[in-house]
Length: 312
Image (cartoon, rainbow, N blue to C red):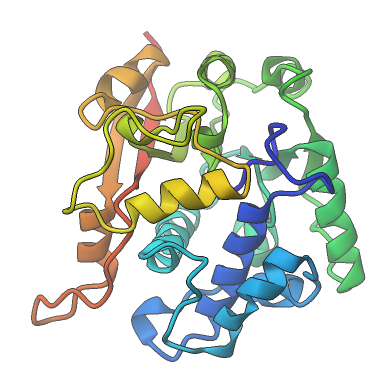
């Protein structure tokens, strides 16, 4: 959940949403509620170094209070937890399958560190805006965490560089497969950037390579006046607050996919859907008890996609 690959970020070069994601993962690590607990211990360590005004406002999350800060839209915390658990499970299940793993818009992602033993035979590349990436490297050094030897940092400013040029430096050998993770990224890029990005991934990927990403629904995009073409209705949970929240911090959503358009979207780039998890599906998988009771409501603005590349 960050925008660091593009220019919609704070003057200091790093994304407020990337910080918020890290803070929420840190809260999740210390959760007393078992269903909300995840395993990002690195987020706990890194979050202690955040001193921006935005982060200091959000750090009430780390105190374990049940009452969420009003600055965070309803359902975002459980969404971040569910998204983390969802992606972690894929990383653990597919460990060893991919020779190369590319994490785009990495922000404070810690999977290369947390899953080092499982992923030690894969080369991992974190791709992010130079300022954001340098900030992360400095934070890791500050808390004495050394990046694993199989992790390479690749700074890219997508306003000036094309991912295809970077990928050309790391050709896939026969039989090699790769995994691309675009977590909390696409919604902050413009449509042209998304097309260029996914075309580069498609052209690079071999048969059996996979991609994980989340997106917001197209009808939620905010125009220059801060309104949507089709404002959310009452059944939507936390969507209005999310739209207003990202706009307020200068990171408004600029790309979305129609709710019924995901198959066609994937087909453009040679991918086939393996799994789709919207808010209701995530609630069912992660936050529903044995009696069928939903323990947490998830913000309904986003949906997770897991897909495989199939060459034509």
